[in-house]
Each structure stands twice: as C-alpha cells, then as structure tokens.
Length: 412
Image (cartoon, rainbow, N blue to C red; front, side, top):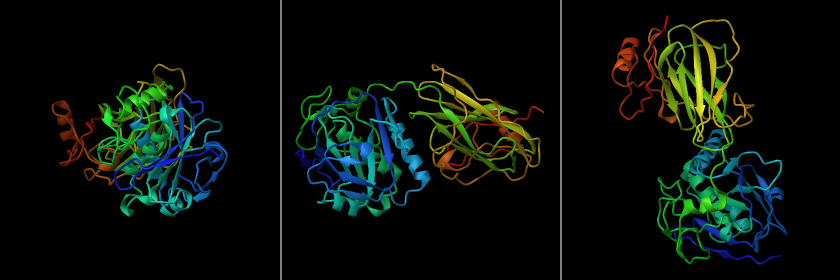
C-alpha cells in the first residue's frame, strides 16, 4: 500500500483535514457525484470513486451513514448552491452516479463514521491533498456529524464544507480568515476568493498567480477546470399546476429547471394580463399566492441560463371552475446551442414546499406572488404598472419583502 500522510491545516475548531495523494493523470472537465446515500467506502489498493475505494494509510473500511435526516428538498437545495457557487467553471454536480467515469465523489457521514474511518479529532471536511490536481479524481468526505446539531442540515454550511473537501483534491489549501471557500465558515463565505490570500499553516503547493504561501481560489478553479462550456438551453419541468388543471385562487406555481450549471433565472407571465414577468433566480423556483378572476388563463413560464439560452412553455389553466382540457404549449427556445429544450423527464427529487400564500380576498382582483422562501407578496413599480395594480386590487409588498413587478389587466 502507498504511504499517505495526514495534515491538519486549518487552525480553526477542527473543520478540515487534507490527506496527501500520489500523482496520476489529471482530467480536464470535472463531474462531481454528490452521494448523500448510505454506502460502504472501502480501503483498497487504488483511489477510485467508481468502486467506492480509497487508498489512504490509516483509513478503515467504513459503512457511511449518508446525510441522515436530509429531505429531498434540502438535497436539491444543496445541489443548487454548489452549482451557483461554481458558475464560471466547467464543473458539473450530479445527484445520480454517472454511468461511466471519471468523476469525483463526496460521501456523507456521522461523527461515529469519522471515528471509524479516520479516527482522531472530528473534522467536517476531509479530502486528499493533491497539489495542482495531478492525481485526478478522488473521494472527499463531508462529516456532518462534526457540526453542531443545529448546523447539520444547514444547506449553506454543508455546501461550503463540501466545496472545501473537494478543494483539497483539486490542489487547494486552507486560507486564513473567513469570507471564501477554503477559509473558515461565514455566512458570506460561499464564494471563491478573487485575490491572493495568505494560506493557513505551512504551504505544500504552489498556486496559480500567487507567491509561495498564498492562494487565489478563483484562479485555482480556472487553472484546474477551465471556463464553463455552454451545454445548450435548460429544460423546464412544471410541477404544478398541470395543463388544463382547475385551480382556485390563490394558487401557487412551482417548477424545476434542469441545467448542468448554475446561474439560471426563471420567469412567470400571464398571457391574458400584459405586464412585466415575475422573475425568480433562487431555489425553489416558485410563485405563491396568485389571485386571479375566474376563467381561463395561460401561464407562460420561461428560463434563461448563464450562457443566455432561453426556453419557455405555456401552461393553460382554468381558475374557479371547469374548462376544456388542453395540451401544454410547445416549448420555445433560443440561444447558441441546437439542443432541444422543453420539459424534462423529472428524475430529480421534489423541490421544497412553497411559502405561505397571500393575496387580497375575493375573486375579483389579481396579484402575483414573489417566489421561494420569502413567501407570497405583490409588488409593482410606479407609473402605469402601479395604476393597473391599484385598479386590480393588488396589494403592495410588505416591508422587507421583495417586489416582483407583475400587474394584472385583463384584455377582455
């Protein structure tokens, strides 16, 4: 068996561990499998994520618990956060094991799993130290059990440490302070540094564009993975309501957007009510508390990815009573790629529940809700849009709520 060394590099409360890895051929584009399920990681003769095998001196074969207690919604949000943080680079995160390699893998474990596999003090992020990413793909470890109880299902914090564990295998080291990946955790730290920062502890590697003892996270990511390559337009999956469905005001609209990378922005417009679309660029993609008069209405849902590729789909629904069941509208798209967009097969987990509904009572007015965790609100700009909102009886946003700028004015 090869000899491996273990180095505690972060002078913070036992957050991170990096392990030394022997060189092997590196890969260009990176695929990362986020494996939140329970599985056995084997001590073996090679470091191979496809066989769940790691070759580390002192590692003991361990049955990892997976991310215990995490809901499908939290796993989906973790995936979204990882994609958002790595938008500029050619790194793709997936929740299903790729059919063929190579790929990195992150596995999840409890504090007991850490004690069984590595022993010693409990460290949240553990990865294989690999200067310049010379050895290629590897397995990283996210030990949620080493976090405080209240933080173990915190998707933001888990995403931060997931990227930290991956960072070691990508040739990065811990940096001093907070505010960026590879540093100590902070609420504003889910991003890569854009300047040379001092390393925390002794330096083992040279880093792109920096003097010895310093590291620039963004430069490292570009050096390892290159710029994001356009994968074509995203696809939209409408979760609710379905085409032809009868809905009662207030109702919610919820979608899933499939794209290899982050940076997706979605929008919702009401075809029969001309106004600016309601835009949502944060998980979960949803619009809550929509108040409309009874009758047929067409929901026009759009998505645009980080490369400017656009798709849209029309969903006819009937508010307050029956209407003829129609087929969903065809998806339209534009962009730099010829790949087809449209509705996806929907293999991902369900997205999170919508926030509380809101809107004026009664069926005579109309309002559009804000999306995601901020709950349902109505918001309008000044001028003509505000006049329309007032005429329709739409309430304005409450203090602290985000405006979405959608009014309702029937063409009938």
